[in-house]
Length: 110
Image: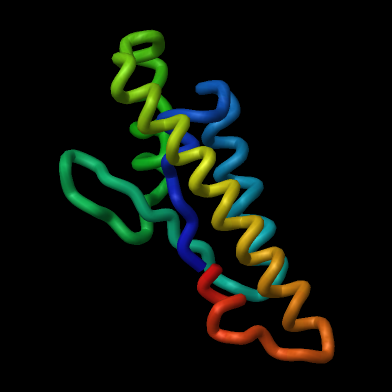
């Protein structure tokens, strides 16, 4: 299961990042899947970021704390709102799937 690493460089307090990643991986394994953190290290996209890579991402956040510009903060806020909308959409799809009627095309793309 792919797990995003953006929370390490923004979002959570810097000291909570790696313990949270460890807990996320454990939860995925507890449900019978294999976690794979995805992120960008050294300008390269990586699938399967290891613990050292997770630490690097968390350290990068600590080193630039307070240095993000208005544009970056705006992008982060937009991303948070977008993720919230996506999760609401998935919740709605799951709720509809549990019901007796399938979604129409309009409902699925709304």
